[in-house]
Length: 239
Image (cartoon, rainbow, N blue to C red):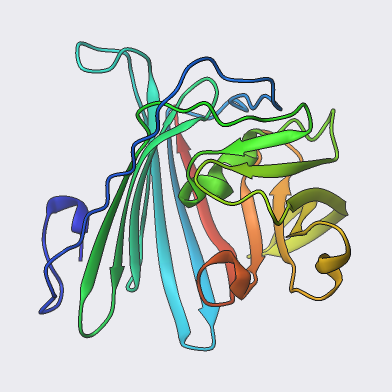
């Protein structure tokens, strides 16, 4: 069912909305992310596999141009599956996320969460990648400057700095899916330092060629949801 049309697939409990506001001024120095030549529109299908079974994940992303209600162009990134729907809005140039909605669905309830970034002044360093909203991590990493840097520490806007999470390149691999070969950078996400040896790691495979499509992901349970594997089924772009 399509939650972006405000429908409900189950006899759900009332939706719960959380609005997160952050106050601030000028952004400190940090790693800059840039649009890796995203097309105006993308349609992607993945299969998601976990201990709970398999499900298809449909992804749509399209460009919203600057207009009377939008001071700068942005992308709407939507995912839909049996267990989770998501809408993420991110600026077209910096891929900075400023709004997200998530619908978590099961047989008994539907929970609706809203994150809205109003302002922020999270202190960051030159080796930090600021993540205002973890919901858009996979799409935002498509714009990371992997050709100039091979690692970064994630700085979460509303998270603790006690434990550091690092992303880094773990080599290159050629993945063959649906009779197509994809030359990919393998990106590792894990706890930094000594603790990283005791906790599971997550891996993401992005095409070396632009627009750096996510081809496969092996996500550990530490990412805030059940452990699962995401694998590309089809990709198409509109120009």
